[in-house]
Structure formats: C-alpha cells, structure tokens
Image (cartoon, rainbow, N blue to C red; front, side, top):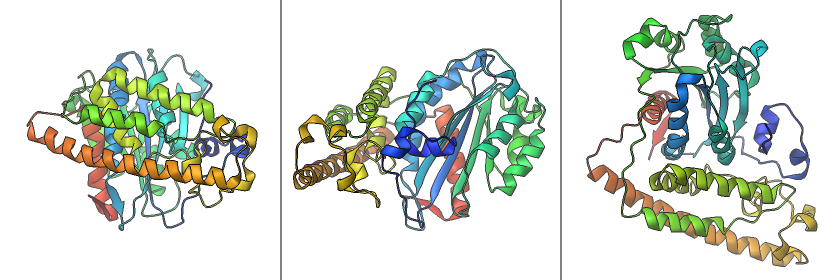
Length: 374
C-alpha cells in the first residue's frame, strides 16, 4: 500500500525514505511527555461496524485527549495502527499487518482507517499484542501513557502466542493492554477478553460494534466549518511531498464530511488543537521546530507564490500565516466550547461505543500518572 508516511512513522517502521532526508525532523523538547496509543483492530468479516466506528469517532477521541495535561504540560499524541484477523493478510505473519508505527500525523491515521476493508480470517490476539510490543518504540519515560487498545469478537486465546505471555511482556514495558470485546459483555469474559486486560491492570469493555455513531447538531457547526476553510488557507506546502500532503488533508476533510456534518466539525476542532502537527510539509509548523533553517529551503520546492522571493519576504509571509492561523484556532476553540455546552444542554445520549470505551479507560489510567483534564 502506497502511503506518504510522516517522519515519525518512517522512523517507527525502520525505513529511510527521501522524506526523511528532505524534510525537517520534528523536534520535541526532552521534557515533553507523550500519550502513545496502539490501536489493534480486528478486520475480519464481522467487523465492518467496528471499522466504521473507528472512522467516525477518531476525531472526538483526539479532541478529548487534547485537553489532557501532564504536570501542567500539554503532552504529545502518537497513534499506531494494526489490523489483524483478515484472510487478505500474510498467514506467515499470523494474519497481522502493521499499518502505521507511532506517528503524530493525524491525517495519515485517518487515511489508513478509511482504507481498511474486512475479510474473514483467524484472530490471534496474543500474537498481535506481542508484535506491537516488539515493533513499536514505546519510549522510556515513566510519565508517558503507553496503551494498547485491542478490539475484536473471537476468543482471546487463539494463536501460537499465549495472551498471558504477551500481557507479561507488556507489563515489563509499562504498557497497559485494554480490551474491547465487540459483543455481549459476559461472552467476552468467558472468552478471556477481560482476563487479557486485568493481567496488565487495563480495562475490559464490551461494545455494540454495529451501533451507528450518534451525533448532536449545534448552531455553531456551520461557523466552525467555515473556519476550517480559512484554516486550510494558512498552510504553506513545501518540500517534495508538500502538494501531495495538502491533497491528503483535503481528502480527510471530505472523508469526515461524508459521515456527517458533526464529524467534519470534530475534525476541524482537532485541526485547531496542538495535536495537529504538519512540520514535515507545512512551513508554518516547520518554522517552529528547533532545527529549521530558512537557508536550507530549496526554491523549486517552495509554492510558486514564494519562488523568487527573498528570505526576508518568505519570513514575513510565514509570520502572517502563523498569526492568521493562531487567530482562527482561537475562534475554533471558542466556538467549540459553546458547541460542547449546547450538546450537553440537549440531554441526548451520545454514548458512542469505541469512543466512550477508549476515553473512559484513558482517563482512568491517566489519573495514575499525574494527568489532568481541563
């Protein structure tokens, strides 16, 4: 599958690509903590509803996490994505595919979720957990939230790797395994999904994966979507993949809108948060990185309106777009607060399976590591 991975994803996959050579490498201060979430999704025949929930609820999950703080600092968010239990996958690999290593490129996460298809297969939970432990860089900061969320509906005991061994290995790495059974709560317990979570002090949850995502429209939605159009105008694509990444951004806007206006609104709110980083292809984000150097920019890899400009002129243009973006993001945040208040005032049930299960577990476990929510 051809995809334009972010710098972080390229590193996580252990591959060196031209993007790593040409684009500035994002720099995070050593004191910055991270929330690392590996999402392991069953993509066998019966899991179409689960994949739909993941697509529809991604942005609300990101938005809830954006309010988290660790020791008064805003943490980074990195998401990894695996699929398992699909007959189209390599049987020698246990019908498992690592789609993305840990990345902060949320557009890539959305793009890959929307590319998933289902097909009957064998679901080896212990194997996919162990692979994610072996293949991903979980880091060594004890304050980081390191969490696996595995979702599926077949017995947790299948495969050559015992889930109990995988759970013990997770504990050694400080990784919490949370299990989401797609079906009856008691049946999930009987098939060891709860045991798989408790072994690492994680949470066991059961959801109706075929339930449609619930949205509540608000009077602020149209204004937020108009701000999304303005926000997109603040991006300055550069480098070898700048134009392609703008296209990916636009495609994920369209994917969100296909689900509903509310989902497009949620994505806009995510794009206005500190989690939405695009320093590998956007000059505004890149200019904030510690190792960015205007002198290293290649004229042919700049947008046409900046080619032939002096460094002073380019700096002034980037500054103006940065200020414009900050203003728009502030407006999005203010409108979203009103939107949230309105939705809560409607007293309508917005209990969405995957989203609520993940957020409940994340908040519960975050409290153990000095995380707070604004």
